[in-house]
Structure formats: structure tokens, C-alpha cells
Length: 452
Image (cartoon, rainbow, N blue to C red; front, side, top):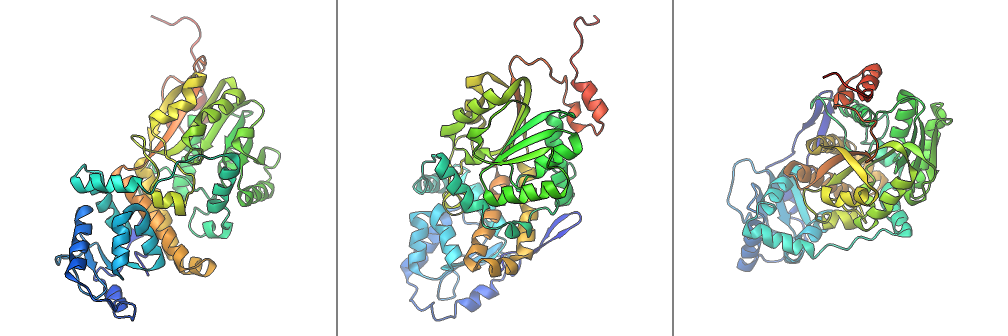
């Protein structure tokens, strides 16, 4: 079922939310599976459930085809439950079971999925009675995250080794960046915004020709190739996804960069050597906070005395687990840290945080583009996988949009160095200048003695 076909224009995603009238949902309600009698208890249960999530501006319909919520003009969505047990499962563990019910077809949805979830999330995090109860129930679905080396490989395989052809359908065409883009102009297209993100990272790291860079978790290798091509550095990039590393190596060879970029199929904990720069974009979410000290130890042993580093990660304003459904069905082992938790990487090794930037709304915009492209190619994905897979990834992308819009999730870029390093820029001007000469001049430390 289409929950919001979208098309990407040159100026960004344009969205059409489909049939808000719920005509498709009504038609399905006449099928043989909708035969159980709807009781007064069912209607009370449905209204109670809707009340617990703040009575979002949608229509709730039961298996007899009748609405239980008051009629509203232009509802953001029509939600249809196919049976009583599906409603009970939702109340038992909403964060985990709602997604499963949607994916297996016991719950049908017609409308703006991201907009509906945004309303629900805003209520949950507003502190109201229903929100507190909902958060308490949600904790029941969470697992403790401990990513040993074998477990980390299994988790990465689950998400990233499902086929490069699938990701090519909806990521940017140039570098296949599966991380937050950067939109200096919010109307930029996805390709330009991802290139802007790559420059943004490189400028923060003050890259210069001849630098040695180690990257922990490199995806399809786009950042490593970009750094080598545009900034003249030598990169060693680590990743434990077989498909991603194979793709990255072939691209480096095709682009004539194999002499400057090395892709290593190995765990970040096995990084060896010393480097001018450490960078990790979109890997920390997979590390798990129990292993932050291990990551800090890796950085400490591989970073030169005047080295620089950057970690780019999804996070939270205060500690809390990943959405239970996403952690179990999409991103096993994932954990988005708070800034306080991230300090467990830096403090034990006297690594000094120099700059923190939050790109939360940039990630919401990135996801809007991804969802638009995913919907445009949903029939192709259905042939590649199946209908349940399509629904799962639609829900994952739409739910992530909602989470970033309401502030449930953040996106941190943290720049750091050793606390004894004095080769530091005196302003942030180097980040925003297009001139490498200006960036180098701004990063130089004045000689001893200053004019009064």
C-alpha cells in the first residue's frame, strides 16, 4: 500500500501524501478476513489506545469498516485494524508490535506516515500521563546492547549486506552516502548536499596534502575517495561489511585512487599505525556504549601528537535506547549516545573536544529525500525483496524523519584533538571558506609574542 508517493525535484523533496480519505483502506475492510463482530469493548479499547498517543489528527477504523474516532476534516492518516488481537498487541508493547503489525498487514495505513508519527512522538515526549505510560511500556521492548566482534559482524551483515543494488535505488548517485547530508541551502538536492557534507567534514579536519587519515567504518568508501581526490591525503579505511568493501575497492580502482586509498575488511578495534587524522562518520551508533573506552583506546594509540579527529553520530539529548522496533528489525545492536556518554571516548585519554555541531534538521531533510526516492522505487524493491520488506523500510525511514523533527534523535559532529596540541585554528572561518589558502592561513598559530 502506498503511504505517501514522493518525487524529488531539483530543489528538494516534493511530497504527495496519497489518499487521505482512506478509500483503499475501506475497500480492504470488505475482504473475508474482516468477519469478526466489533463489540463495544473493541471500540472502547480503540479509543483508549488512540487517547494514549495524544489523539493524533487521524481516523481509526476497525474491521467492520466503521470509524471509532470522531470525523475530522483532512485527516493526516486512516488506520485500519484487522482484528482484536492486533489492538491488544499494540497496547501490550506499542513500540515493538505496532511496526510488526503494519509490516505483516494486520494494521493498514493510508496517509502521511511521517506526519502521523511526528504527532505521536510529540505527545509521547510532552510529559503527559499517556506519554509517561507509553515510555514505560516502550522500555519493555528494549534489549541490552553488547557488540562483541562476532556480534558486530552479524549486526552489520544484517543491515548493510542485503545488496548494494538496493541502496543504489535511493541513496545519492555519486558517493552512496548513507549518513546525514549537509544543506547550507535547505533547497539543495541530495547529491549537492552530500558533497557539501563531505567538504564540511574535510574542512573541520583541516585536511592538507600529504596527511595520513584513518577512517573507522567507511560505508561504501565515498568519504575516503573524496578526501584523497580533493584534499590530497592518503587514507586507510576499515569496515566489516564484505559487500561495502568490495564495492569501495572497485570504485577506487576505477577512479585511479587505489594508490592513495586502502580499504581494510576488519574491525575498527584492529586499527594499527599512526595517523594525522582519525575520522568516523556514522559508525558510533553501532559501537555500543560498553565499548566506548575501547574506541577511545584505538584513537589514543593511532593519533599522532598533533593529530585531529572527528566523530559524526546519531545521538540523543539525554541517554536512552534506540526505538525497540528499529533496533530489532532494522539496526540490531544500534545505540544513539548522548554527548555525556560520548565523553567516555575522550576523557580517559585526555582528548580535548574542540567543536560540537548539531545537524538534527539536516538529517530530517536527508531522510525526506531518501524516503521520496525509496517510494519512487518501491515496486522495484518489492520485486527484489517482498512487500513486508518494503513496509518495514518505509516505516523505518518515515519514523526516523519524525524522530529527528521532534528532537527524539540528534545528529552530532564532534571535533577533537589531544589536549596538548596547540596547532589549532583561532576561529571557525576555515570551515566555511572555499579557499584552501585561506583555510591554511586561518589555522596557523601565531608566532611567540603578540602586538599589544
